[in-house]
Amino acid sequence: MNAKSVDIGAVRAQVSAAEWQVRVNLAAAYRLVALYGWDDLVFTHISARLPGPEHHFLINPYGMMFEEITASSLVKIDLDGGKVLESPYEINPAGFTIHSCIHAARADAIFVMHIHSLNGIAVSAQRQGLLPISQQSLFVLASLAYHDYEGVALRTEEQPRLVRDLGDRTFLMLRNHGLLTASGSMADAFLAMYMFEAACAIQVRAQSGGGELITIPAPVLAGMRDAAAQVTRGMGGALAWPGLLRRLDRVNPGYAD
Image (cartoon, rainbow, N blue to C red; front, side, top):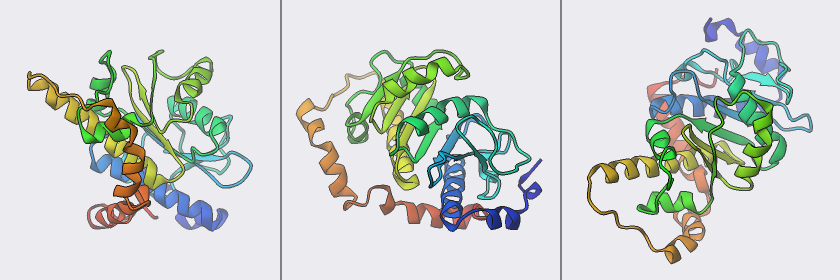
C-alpha cells in the first residue's frame, strides 16, 4: 500500500487548517530524517500532538518509507491507540508506547522525535554517555536525560519510567537504543535532534582517533542555554526550518500532499 491509497482531498476536508499545518510540518520532518539517513528503514517514529483537549496525535503509517510520507497519510490516533480518522494504515506499536505517554505527561511536548541513528546508538551503549568534547555536545548536555534499556518498547509498564527519566528535558538518550527529542515546535525538535546526532557522530569519530580527548570545562556548560538563544537570535529551530523546507522542495517535493 502506498501514499496514493489515501484521498488527499478527503483528509484535508476533514481536518482544521491548524491540523493540516501540523501534518505538513510532521511529514516534512519524516522526509528530512530520511534525507539525513536517520530513518532505520521504517522502524523509528516522530509524532505531533494536535490542538484541542482530546490529546489526539499524529504518527507515521507503519511500513511506509519515510521519504514517501505525506501530510494526508499520517495516522491520527488517541491516547489508547485508536484511530480517530479512518486510515488504511496501522501504526508502530513501539512508537505508540513511547510517544503516547510523553504526549500525555508533557503539555509542552507537542512534537516528539525518536531515531535509531548508528552514531546515537553507539554513544547510548557507552557507560559515560555523551561526553562534553564538542560545542554541539554542550547544547545537548544543557538539557539531557537517560533511560535504561528494557527491551523493545511494547509494555505499558515501562511508560512511567520513561516519563520520569525524561522529566522536563529536551533530550533523552535511550540506552542501547537511540535518541529522542521533545519540544513545542517541529522546528525546535528537529534542530535538537540534529545537534544530538551531530554530537554523537563527533564523539564516535574523536574516539576512533585513539588520542586523548579534551573535555570542555564545566563552567562553560553553564552558559550554553543563553548562548544557544543568542546564536539563533531567539528563533531556535525556526531559524533553519524554512531553509530545510526549501531543500525538501528541491530534492523531495510532495510532503504537503
